[in-house]
Length: 388
Image (cartoon, one colour):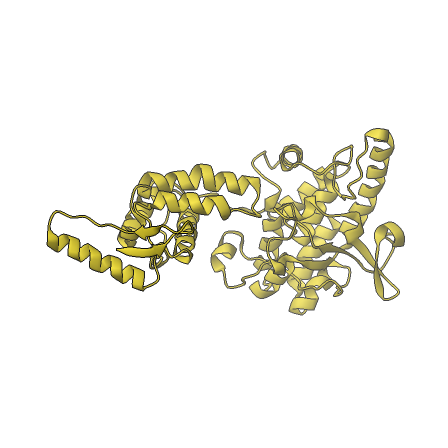
């Protein structure tokens, strides 16, 4: 069967074979049907080939960690289950069986990622007219083995103890800001001094110029330690007013950083970051975790906590005291308030909307009242943290 001509001018022929004439006729009819439908299937093009093609072009803009996960873990596991199957012969049943086999030995999240990768790879093949439909998209990924990574949060008393233990340490402002604003750890690490601002005479000015003694001090959450430097979602881009406890911690932190800069001398690298090591370079998440666990141990909480659980604590305390999920999603920069499964483990998630020029007032209780009408129980919780 002729499929036209190649760029070099030679005729492209597709051949089929079978044990009987009836089998050959059936294969020819199927081939004609595919060609008439716009498909140009390759001989022996397998699921493994589709994965390779997608990995070659589909990972632009992703972090090195994500690329490594897709290449070395997910794609390898999919090849073990489906790599030799011809893409045109792949069925939804094949995909379901393969994902079920993977789910018996990996977490639910890994099974979901594997399904997502397979859908994307076949979608690219579908775009290139190598397959008629994406059978992987018809399959629901199964639950994986084990409970996965648990989410936990501090109680109000534990949060107050943690801030007390952090007093005077290099990580004090990092902990206070994370706990009282619900910022993601990757958002805190990339926070810049020119994004810590005060409302002065009808406009925002960096606190480096306006000072901290203003009625309203806020942070622009516009950057994140992710591939490309952008926030996790467009909705995560927000402006948050700061409680006075955060303002005081940042003021002290800026003084400490100025001392670091003088001590470092020529070794100082100015990246404009609020949170940086003693020479001004970007914070490494592993170093932050190590320092954080020293403080949690000093607070009597053990060494099993990690910084991301400060965000969980922010969300959990507000949710436990009656703040609606929708209000929590606004403050925390979450894009889907209907994702109750995300809220279940930590009670809910919260965020305040904000375009670049929008602003909120400075105290933690007022910040919440703008969204949910100043519930007294929430004011009590945040006030306790603000004083702690």
